[in-house]
Length: 140
Image (cartoon, rainbow, N blue to C red; front, side, top):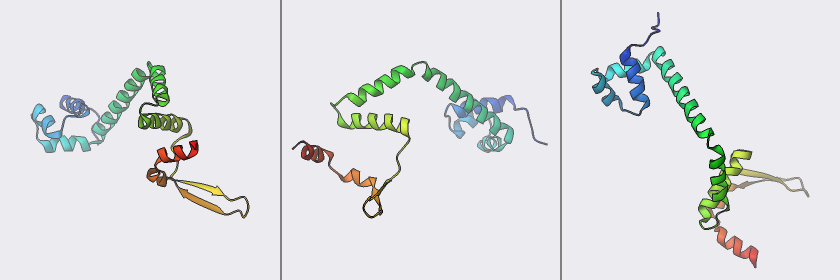
């Protein structure tokens, strides 16, 4: 029969674990063997409590962040418009586009209208292209 109730030490272990403490430090603080901590972490009731606490922490963090979501969006939009650092501007624009449309795939499939051939273009090649030269060529 599986245990349902957690001991006080197990509750303390979970709290320390979620704070980022390592196993050795948790064992020392609770005055138990490291192996005991690993055994507890393998128990279904401890796993369930750990998952519940993680979900609770995520919910709390999301609630805190949602209070200022408008400010965060405005800051990202300001970075997207800031031309002083092209990398920051590009990253902010990519982030905003990806949030709206999702992350792009690694290739684009195009169809040639004349002979109905499909071609794959590798988007990773864009990493090799010097965009400043492309912009200069376009401006000529």
